[in-house]
Structures are given as C-alpha cells and as structure tokens.
Image (cartoon, rainbow, N blue to C red):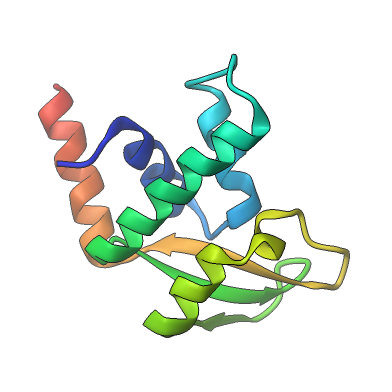
Length: 116
C-alpha cells in the first residue's frame, strides 16, 4: 500500500511524464500550509520510494518536451539526490522527468479500488 503523497505523485506519473521540479507543486494541493522546502523533502522521500518499488522510471529530457532518454537505476538514484533537477529547467536545457511503469499504473489503479 502506498501513502497518499506517493499516490498523488504516482497519479502525476500516470497522467504524464512529469518534471521532478513539479513534484512539490503536486503536493501543494494537499499541504498548502507547508513551506517549499518541506514540500520538496516530502516529494523527495515519496519519489525515492516509488522508484524503489519500481512504480516510476526517470528520464532526461531536452526541453521543451524533447527526446526522452531513460536513466538506469544508478543514474535515477543519483538524479533524485541531485538538487539541480528539482529546479525548473532553462529553456532548451536538460531536465529530469518521471513516468509510471506498468507496475506503477497497476498500483495506482489498485489504490483507487482500495479508496472506494
């Protein structure tokens, strides 16, 4: 079973290939009173867990919305810990984005069934 914060971020990953910098924005709807730093820490913990579970995968992206290149497990772990990827990218810069894996889509659907 995933936490509600993980569920919110997993939905973003199911819906689109989401920028890592957008993770804290996604959580703001649940916790509007939290500081940006606290939201980022929460997003960091949640994305690390979703990656560990195999529910998301990470990609580099040539902005805006260019070619996606999958990161392997080692590079994904490094990217989650690298603060540069938690900032909005420069125009035509490189970003790191996350998307749901098939296992992540199944986990999200299961979490919806558990809530009903």
